[in-house]
Image 1 (cartoon, rainbow, N blue to C red):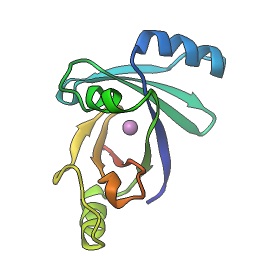
Image 2: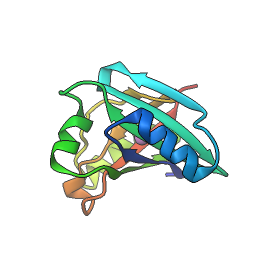
Image 3: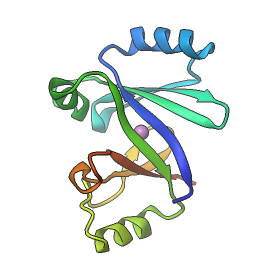
Image 4: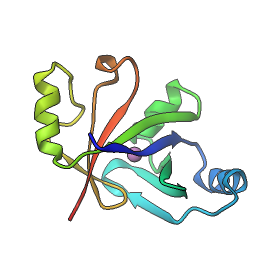
Length: 133
Ligand code: CO
């Protein structure tokens, strides 16, 4: 893994949270993007070298809807940039870490992504992401 790519925050109302975080960070989000396949809308803030992703559900089947029916809004996942996502997925599987998807999925921000099972990672939802070239 190369570095933390972004930290994901689950929110109920993307509009309200965009305003709130713009106030907190002192700048607007630079990008908002729907990921229809995941049933989410995201928005990204750049803070120096770091990125924060707000993520809200766009339908009731969305993983974020399910998450927010059991948890409060807040820290949701940490995303790590990788060079070769398939290689990293294979390596982690060999280490006994379950993956939430067996093949890389298209995520927001021009990335291939894969989530690791939080039961195998001390409860931390970890996302791998690889830039699509
Ligand atoms: Co993410």
